[in-house]
Image (cartoon, rainbow, N blue to C red; front, side, top):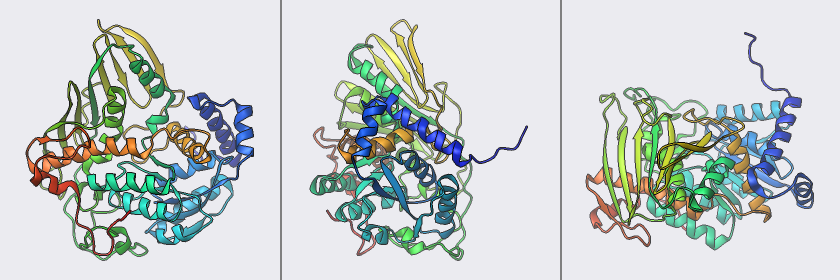
Amino acid sequence: MEPQTKPSRRDFIKSISFASAAVTLGGLGFSAKSYGRILGANEQIQTAVIGCKRRGIPLSESIAKASEMAHLVTACDIYQPQREELASQYQELTGERLKLEEDLRKVLDDRDIDAVFVAIPDHWHVPAAILALKAGKHVYVEKPCSHNPSENELIVACQKKYNKIVQMGTQQRSAPESIDVIDQIHSGEIGEVYLAVAFYSNSRGSIGNGKVVPVPEGFNWELFQGPAPRTVYKDIYFDYNWHWFWNWGTGETGNNAVHELDIARWALQVDYPDRVVVNAGKYHFKDDDWVMYDTMDATFHFGNKTIKWDGKSRNGYNTYGGDRGTIIYGSEGSVYVDRNRYRLYNREGRLVREATAAERSSTIALGGGDNMTDMHVANFFAAIKGTEKPNAPIDAGAKSTLLGHLANIAYRTGQPLECTYQDGHIKNQEAMKLWGREYEPGWEPEV
């Protein structure tokens, strides 16, 4: 087998052309000719990527593929090697050099930047988004859109106050197959929907036991912590394991469940649950420093509709025939949908219709890019230009993110949650204390 080589600039330009075609095919509503006229009539959107590791690199590639609408000018990261690596890859693909910054506040001070992509750890999502909105920027914020329920309310209020586009990075909202099957569900194709089962299986290993060590050279630990209360640096936190510590992460239910819960909520057309019941625990590698659950079964009740979450972070058994996805049940049939396809069955269980994505996307790979991301980023830019509506506006994203937060609170309190259906607020005042979080003094986000 010949060794794999990186794509040449010519190959990359071909992929850009493909992505542009995919945008039109993705149901965005414009022929190639009219699409070109719209792009030609508007100035390019100047953008910056904040966070250059997991999602930062694929996001930068998606921005490049939307080069008719936008231009990436700055890469920002608190770790020098990561921002340099993104810049190197971007230059190899496009021939363009990026400006590099360590501190996101310097990026936001740049008046020439119109939009930012927030791809940094969960505890930074809302503080960074609010700073960006106050600086007059549009914001694409990765999931989960917040670290806690209070921040959901802050980011939604801030978007309304400053009237900018804020899109959450639930890219399946822009997948043509998902849009198609959700439209079929809403039109009654499987009758009255009553249940959605969202699931995720992965075989994450032990993270070991952390040791207090010197902060790596070029790594700004103070800025990494940002709004979070200060703690000592340990060798296991970076660059991914912060997910499993409450100071910075939201667990698998914030990390991956938001994608699938968003599809479930979208399909069932529900907003806030009135009851949340969780059974969860840490069942694998019990002696390592992972502080959260690694397995969760959660049930969200919305009157006569229900969403269930089956999340297994460290058991790779594919219970439902795939590593992630959502099954929607209706009175006249069922739908299995994931990032690459959907299958629609009648009530007898016979396959009636199916569709497969033209290009397979990543499922559980860390930070993987995909054609859905290309289309989601293009939709974000089109929304900024006013030619489309955002596929994942922040008010919808906040509702889906809240489900993950409520599940986490139910786990942490060890009791079911009774919630108000108008806004999801928890009736139990002890549990409601986890609605927000403690911030490092001086870093509190404010609208």
